[in-house]
Image (cartoon, rainbow, N blue to C red; front, side):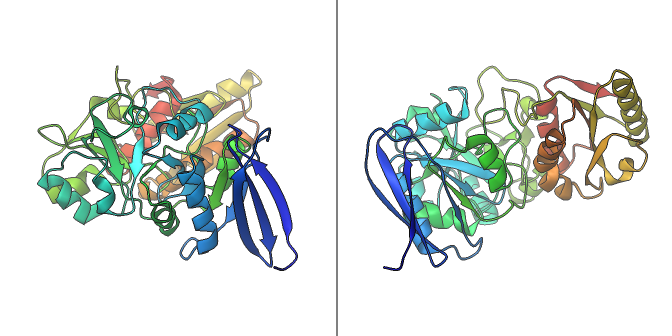
Length: 386
């Protein structure tokens, strides 16, 4: 074996340690039992299309042994644990500070993984899987008896999706188990669209991070409840209502999808303040000209009070704003571009040391529905409609 540099990394629950070696640009990792170790998060860069099998297999071993691995999907980075191991899933909640009544989504690498998770699924599900899997669509189906309560938050349903990212699919297939995975961030923070965002929130808290570059979609999957008589969108995301209706006909949108809270969430992202930067965010919605005028007025008011102001604006509005830190999310004509940049832009403004962020709303149609869902929850009630 060539000369290598070895690093020792211990599990936060002191169940095992990892020794990994860098040899001629390759990563090699070995697991063994250990005690008394502090956790050091392993960070592995992988090719987004053809990841090295050695790294993927080692990460899969960590999942099988009850560890936590952050990995890329086409939507955001996820924090994975074995969906069949209640103890491992509890670690997700502990690491993220996630409320225990907030269910998790289970990620699979093929339909054969549905068997231990779901009692049955309707013909509608088959149509949707054929049309959108792999992809950013989560289907809520009747949970099988063996699904841990930690995954379902005590509900009789479970959300399942097949991610459209080669690294995610390779990791799940290598682990040989379905993987429960919320976004890989501290609960309530903007979701991570790069491995760097994961490091900011979870370094030293989890076992490993797979870095395959930025996520493409930028907002989480659409969650569709198929247990209801008419399919219901519980959380808008990467698949729009219009796209769903082309395949299965009419769908409803849950009232909680517009940013309001529900008493008992049937999907992630329905009850609590989410996606929020560490500074207050004020969302301004309405007719674009009025929104631009109000953003400028609010910015002037805050600056008069000595506050440092950051503004998240569309390309059309940004040129009308004077002073302050302005980050362009994208054009109103391209909500997909805004979605892909949204969370990174919030973290960027936060990193500039502003005291408050003012955000411009867009029309809640198509992918704009998902963008506005995220902004309304990030605002936590600080919303102006003009």
